[in-house]
Image 1: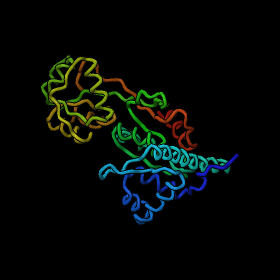
Image 2 (image 1 turned 90 degrees about the vertical axis):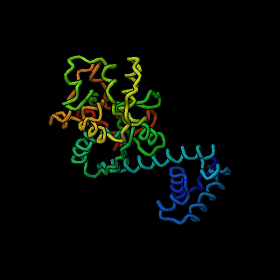
Image 3 (image 1 turned 180 degrees about the vertical axis):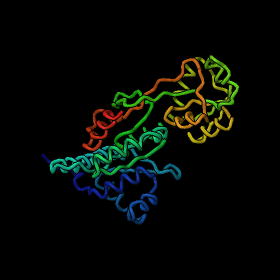
Image 4 (image 1 turned 30 degrees about the vertical axis):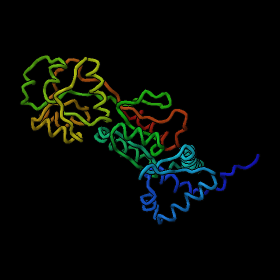
Length: 300
């Protein structure tokens, strides 16, 4: 078989290319890789010479990836992932389980995930852990870009290319300050609840998605709202009487126990959701990721 002309590419060049793809900036890629900006530019030019196509172009001041660059990026990420898997598989041949668990999780998961990571680490001390936290839209973007192999989300996307495994209940509660007037109401419709100021996360959040979907199902327009940038800010706002909210039980369990928040008897609540671990269906997981998925399903 005739060897591919791409065999002239080095792993270092691939690393540099992927850094520029991710950061969309030569100078930031150089800083991250401890190189000079001219060195990064020179390496990208060499890769373009091998490929025979331009990999990046500028529209104004914005660096964009060309169609050829997108093809190379996908192949380069697959190659990187295969090398990581190979390293872990070679360790397995020696009876070892080592490598890096590279996952991303919705911000709501940070209230229970560290405990699961701690027990996993106790059983697998040779495995390093890299956890990225963001809203649902951001972590799914990281998954699609190949920056994380697994993501933890409360709202898996309807994408047939993705495999998702539920491992933990994630009920969403309607909550208010214990002194809120709605506490005196024995039964509440969602419309009545929505007439109070509703404190919400930003679009792209899994919790916000669940709230918007339920409102659409109930034909209720959410007009009295305030957007706060974090779960902690929302909890503080509800406790202080700024408004009401819909929160995952995991995020407000302590405040409910301390009577700082109360769950309201809104019709249809709690909303039943599940935490899921998500990965690409056709991409074989590394041994480390396989072990973590097993850990999740066996410990919840």
